[in-house]
Length: 65
Image 1 (cartoon, one colour):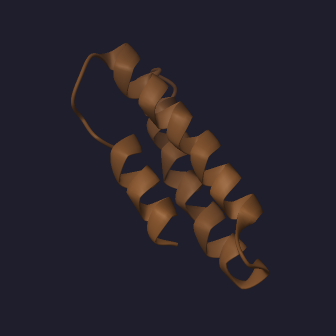
Image 2 (cartoon, rainbow, N blue to C red):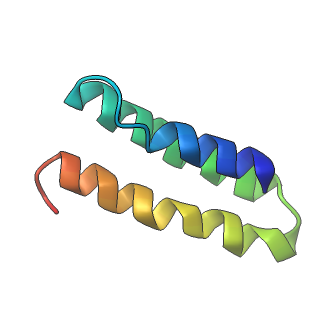
């Protein structure tokens, strides 16, 4: 879970250009998915749920949210 929280924290950083922020958030989604896939079953849902806000962030940054 700690690894996932670090990935999430990096993904939501507001530093950089719009394109950099979108790319960083999308990379975070991929990384969190990978971490969840490798996690114990009891942690997978908690880790995967971190991506919900990242999907919303990407949508907002792209103008869809």
